Length: 266
Image (cartoon, rainbow, N blue to C red; front, side, top):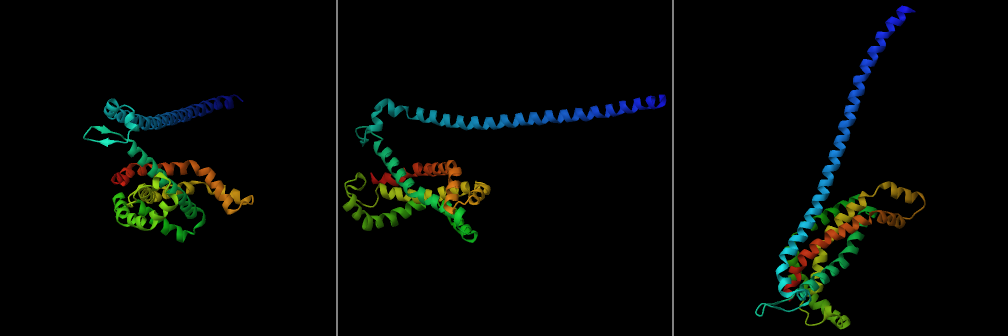
């Protein structure tokens, strides 16, 4: 019994000594992983704060650059529609009105069509048809806005002036949008041009958002007896924040470009 006891002691001590370095390395590895997680979280928070800081900087910069007209004209600069450089009378109301109206027209025309195309490409169209249409949409999104502007001036405006505006004035002439001499370069024309511009952007982003919805949600809806339309509604309910983001992405170019579309109308 004695030799067994004496011989067992060193073996037990050797196992303990070999166990301690293993535990030490594991603890060290866990500590390094926790440090990497904290560093990753800090970097991502820094990026988020940076985006907010950029937006705040833009707001401050615009406020500083717009100080002069507000100091001279006050809030009447936003309400006045007179633009007379000779008497130094300036008002931004026509530009604000034109921007809002043309953007609303563009969104009203483009958003339903864009979402409908995105739903068709993702939920309904076969792959051999969806791929060519998606390619064409991406191609339209890459066309410079000046090309759309030239098309609007030389093709769309004469067509609307000769065939569309006369009928609209007869039926909707009581609306401010259709009053006066329609030369084809009105707010409706600008809104249609902007709708054509932003339609590919909204469609492409909305289609990507719909594709990001997991297929398990579609399969679950179909498993409980939902129709194809009801399954599409489930997909839309889970993707509406992304679709709103797509509309906002389309609204950005709409606001940026509509001044050039309707500025000549003044």
